[in-house]
Length: 433
Image (cartoon, rainbow, N blue to C red; front, side):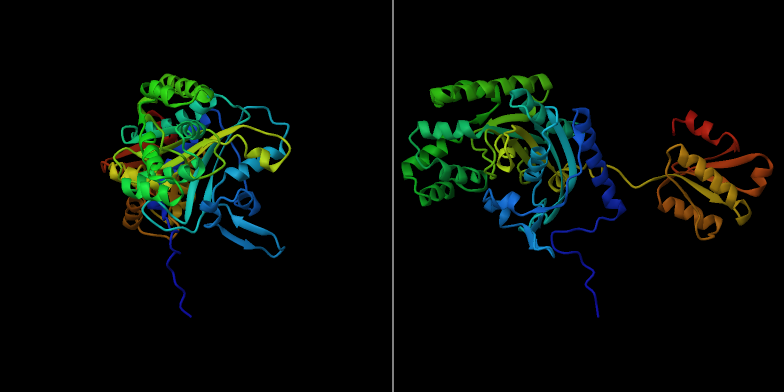
């Protein structure tokens, strides 16, 4: 029997040389979350299907890896994490608000595979529960924008921000009756030509005149604070508070120093129906890639799983499209696989001493390798080079008799004799530790 060794379509075998950049990117995202005061949780990777099917989210439920387990439970590999986090929040009524959580894990959706879109993919979800305020909205967007600032991609990424309530009210105020159908089409506007957009709207029951009006209204975009007056004119009196909130959000993002990355865009809707107000998506500003990720406010979702309402806002950071963006900006790889020190045994007689050094250096927090196969001196040096070792600590009988060891700098090829008892001190002086 011949086994197919290829990974399934939309899944990937990431060996150490590739995974190192992913690991560095994940560390950057998680470190940013920690800096903003978010706490890590570890939710399940499988959940009951009803967390998604009860909301009838066709864009997700049609793509779920869903099945019945041996206990006759209808379960799914999680396609996206927000409902699961809402479930966790509903279970714990003792938590002090705001509750600020993040977690990183794999998600699964059976969808078309394109550049930056996989069937098995990794996301970090960052959410604030229990606070319904523009300050929470601003912090979520600022945390997301800070990630790209750290990556040096802030000039290549822009956040498009909208309020679904505001959009719906503006459409209604201009006589658009089929607002729900219209917003479904608006969600895909950037993927269509103008004529395709208008035809889709009319296919859903709008008149050509109404379709033209929807197209015109959803073209309102630009720096948030520069669009406030136009929004005030277009928005009905009952949602002027939403305009005020958008203005406050723009001012808060200025204070965070990320306003230059953010634009108001009335065409941003987000496909998931549980979003209740603020929505945003991060885009490649040069338009070469699909949306990097998105998020928004979902104040009613937690309440669907229990007896209390808990406002919430958050986003899911997408790694695959961000990796593609790093490649386009020639910032890939972010990091390379390295070994700090390779401890080389010149002969079997000094192997125990070499292992002692390895243990001591590992206790100092270094990554350390030693010979496992009885290789020759030259073979060990070759292996150390292959493993991208920064230093090679050479342990030989003759050196030890002189109370010395030899340190080789692999980048320059220089060697220096060290007192055998001062290896750690030497590395400290070099700021290696």
